[in-house]
Length: 312
Image 1 (cartoon, rainbow, N blue to C red):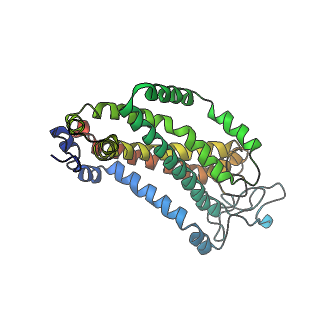
Image 2: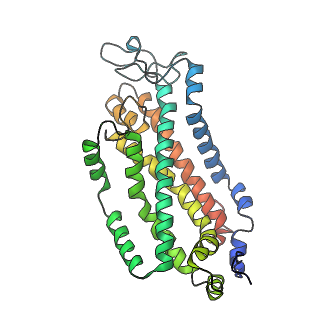
Image 3: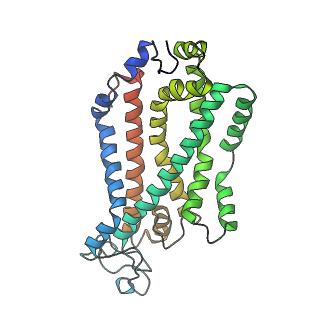
């Protein structure tokens, strides 16, 4: 048997695991609802300029004629009208619909960017630590333990205060959230790798003289993709929530760039007089994170043979 050709695991359980994952996923109504909702908000984020052009507004123009002297929006539901579909922002009169749809861009950019960075670092670290073991595994495991217990929020606040003003704040948020988000997936991938490297097909490839690079690329990583895909899908809402939390605290993406978290934070003081200012960005954030969690649960169930008979 040539070591250049990928070896197929003889274990029938692995075959059953991936036999009909797509069919099982399509049969999960909650996962499909999550996928449709996530796709909807992704389309909204991409088409934000077009949607705002249809409404005739943008998220940066102040309209003081739409607010009273006290700063409260004029009109029903926070100023909802044919010109302002979701009403206006208190004090500034900026269009709330434009803020919400452009805020989707911020959330998806930061959430997906930070997730990609975390997954890349976590997969490389986890698979190499689990495969090589020894002192490298021990050192990396201690680093993971430290990062998991590190108060990253305080670090972000301090870093935001000393970072140069010319440094793009969105990139800074992506880097910080991504660099503190990889330990969890690295620990999962490390455990999976340690189990896989004892499997018959890896042992056989090693006995045939396959080099470490071949074992990592052709034997281990292909059998880790299902775990990585599921974990990635479930990390995205956490990253979006982290960005929203930072914006809520005023250390995330700076104004006037729209951000759901900052809008929610600003809406707290107006909830009695203008509840719509809290409802629309809050509902968008809630539905997006819920959608990705439902999709991640569905992917996990579709790729895990132990949940074959489970219906939600």
